[in-house]
Amino acid sequence: MQEYDLVIRGGTVVTAADTVLADVGIVGEKIVAVALDLPRGAEEIDATGLLVMPGGIDSHVHLAQPSFGGPKMADGFETGTRSALAGGNTTVMPFALQPRGASLRESVMAYHKEADGQALCDYAFHMIVTNADSTVLEQELPALIADGYTSLKIFMTYEDMVLNDREILGVLDSARRHNALVMVHCEGYDAIRYMTERLELEGKTAPYYHGVSRPQSVEREATHRAISHAELAGARMMIVHVSGREPMEQIRWAQQRGIPILAETCTQYVSLEADDLAGLNMDESGGKYVCSPPPREKADWEAIWEGIRTGVFQTFSSDHCPFFYEGEDGKKNAKARTSFKWVPNGIPGVAVRMPILFSEGVRKGRITVNEFVALTSTNHARIYGLYPRKGSIAPGFDADIVLWDADREVTITQDLMQHGADYTPYEGMEVTGWPVMTMLRGRVAMRDDKVLASRGNGGFISRTEE
Ligand code: URP
Ligand code: ZN
Ligand code: ZN
Ligand code: ZN
Image (tube, rainbow, N blue to C red; front, side):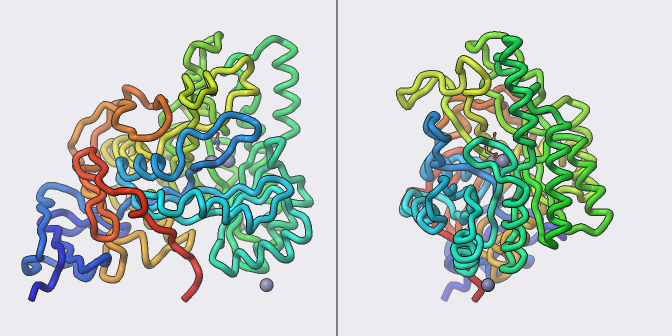
């Protein structure tokens, strides 16, 4: 009788804690052994010369999310999770957006319907709360948290999502009482409105001015305000998609005072810059880089690395939020509108998150390979309640594994992304280090850039405590 269904043999197993030469023994969907010289499995994969790491967990992606009144998102669950697998991920955490006036429960169920039978990798949902009335805060939110939806996002900007300070405090209070983590989009709504009106009066409507309309001071102010509210309410908080030095310093200040603030940064804040949005005409490519917060200056990349190295940031995500540039959904030029105000915010990137962090971080000596695993997988699992099922390579964990060629040199192209969008803002970027195989719960899901998983192979990961 064969002891293992599969043995991944001869690789270097990397976790957030250790780097060891070892084989990985898998039975069914689970890792059952990590040791040298395991007996032969029914199947064998030769990982000689490769890193064997936990599959990536991207805890910040948007799939099948309508942008209000605007164009359709370029990825649903099928293409979005295909792209995730192509980039070495095995779990994604998209958002279930509550349209204003809708019930939270109905909103979450609508996303389940979108995802059921469609996803190629595993997933769990964060809620987006846009309506913080007493029914939501006292009834709906507690009930959903009890059902395992233990993280939610709120916004300090966007017409259709913004919460005022009293509402933010209400959400934080409910989250504290019921033990959920609140993710906050920190940009000040009124400041952005003021700047947008002023720029439009001056005729400054090109995509470049998207960045000008929301400078770092706007993010810094909102970050500080969110932190103060977390302190007042005694609630845990995750500040998401931190873009540069100024908000990073606010978070570091809070952490040093013992306020329980977690923080996330994203691929674009160490690899794209404000000048990528340049070009005075809408048909130039600036619109391809419009996201919020916007990419900053190169000097800010170093501030983000400083935050990564010193532990200000626990997670590194993509904020994958894809829209068509030319427009394949019948709406031409979704990202190329008459004013930056109408350009949908968000860029695709779930497939490049791990390669860019590996190349810029590990290969350039800024972080260790163990820190890479923590930032791309383990910390996401721990913070969002997927641990100890996801996020490491040890007996009992799901066999979600990426085999990584640390020396492979790749030029990023649209073809490699395998997403629904018709472009990648990372086109032409050169990276060293690339996923050569992604395994989802013991099955090969991607090999040599070919996604082998099919719709429905991915499942919903419930976060209910057993
Ligand atoms: O521009 C972005 N990041 N759009 C996605 C929505 C969000 O705020 O995360
Ligand atoms: Zn309760
Ligand atoms: Zn956001
Ligand atoms: Zn986002």
